[in-house]
View 1 (cartoon, rainbow, N blue to C red):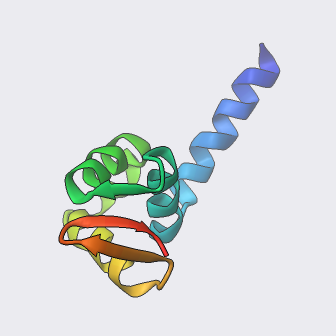
View 2: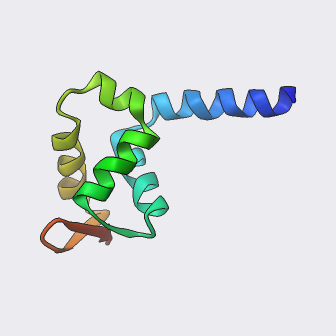
Amino acid sequence: MLILLGNLAREQAARVKATWKAVINLVLQRLGGKADLKSIYDEVARAAPEKIAENPSWKAKCRQVLNSTGRFTSTERGVWQFA
């Protein structure tokens, strides 16, 4: 039981420290590698509530990461996947 609690605490700490790029990467993995913006926003809200609480412009930040890293590509308007 103590090991499980320790693992959960480490996961929570990692989520708080995660970069936006890491969050978007995790979200796209969870969504099967391809998703529309609404699905990405919904999953980011579930995966990183601490990050969105810190940044009132978090949706714009998500779009910035999707557009600027070169790791993601848009296959059609509003749909993103790994490059």
